[in-house]
Length: 131
Image (cartoon, rainbow, N blue to C red; front, side):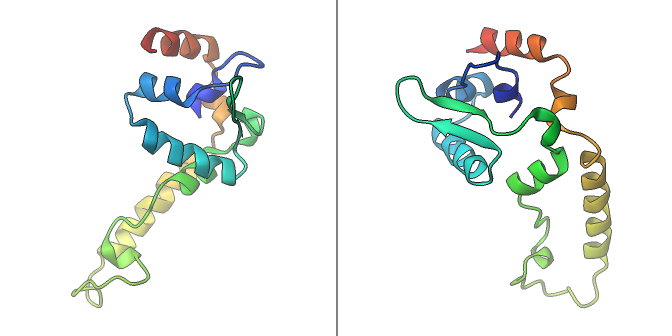
């Protein structure tokens, strides 16, 4: 989202560019982009002049909801609905981790993608150097 949001107006980001900039698998990134598209956070255009753009303004994309969309928060087995933890009935770790997770997300809920793009031109320059 940082890479996509740092692009100049009208320029679409390419999966290959993003994968190169972050040194991640194109296949893995395609899955992420697909999910972001399904959730309405990015728009994807196929073809020669295709690519990825933000579907919303950066100030409309909250970091908390974005992270909730992208991440699996089942930190330990007892967070799963089908968890099979043997000590679940006597363990208090779940409540501690749940409290910590809520505090983490509460901080993220105070920010938007726009907050992370304050140095948009610097980010764009750095990304261009890496691809």
